[in-house]
Image (tube, rainbow, N blue to C red; front, side, top):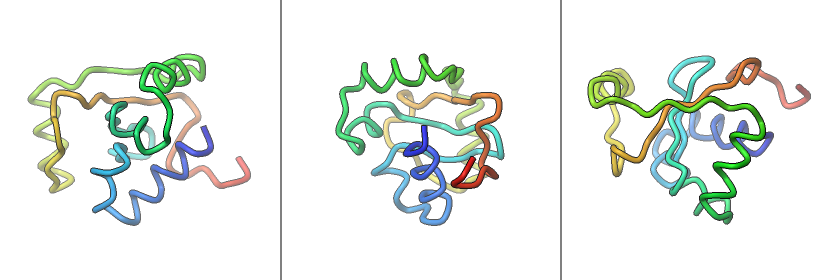
Length: 101
């Protein structure tokens, strides 16, 4: 969970790294995630990563092409393998957290 927050905030400050890390904040509470890319970056199996998301109560929502296009237009980015990205969130897990929280 802490490594996830660090990765998200790193990408927030270094947008070009999102294609290698597989995460991107969309707003203060929601982020998009590509579990295949993220699992490679964290050196864990994709199924293990997905289990961690579920065990830590992260919600997942598959992105429709319309939602995905809206996100891309707002963020001004081009995401690799657009069908493999989903929207994730968890109550209390927000961009504005501090390292100590």
